[in-house]
Image (tube, rainbow, N blue to C red; front, side, top):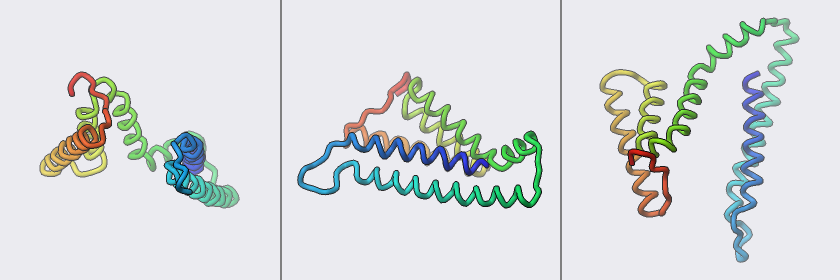
Length: 160
């Protein structure tokens, strides 16, 4: 059931991306404009999400016809057990988005990469050092490239 809900959410996201890409400026000389690539990606996202919904719908119908009956609490426990890592990663991601406006891009991104790396990967001392070095290098590299070469401004917050 979770895959069906994710498929519906991805279809909604694809529709938003598709219709928002109409606002990009168009050039008269070319057939492809700035919104063509996002429209292509959104269309593929919608198509693949429909395929996921159909596939999971068929699996769900087969399991119901086979006589599998579970209570709501048991299904919720099974869902959490199966998707615990995804749920925790999404929680860390939403905290990252919320904190970015207060503590800035650099600090919040470094913390996000470290927490996500610890959540998903190994917690050995050597691996924590590698995760920390990689998060600092990627974040600072991205920040300076976008700020200095592309003139894109990131949230500064109170630290940076």
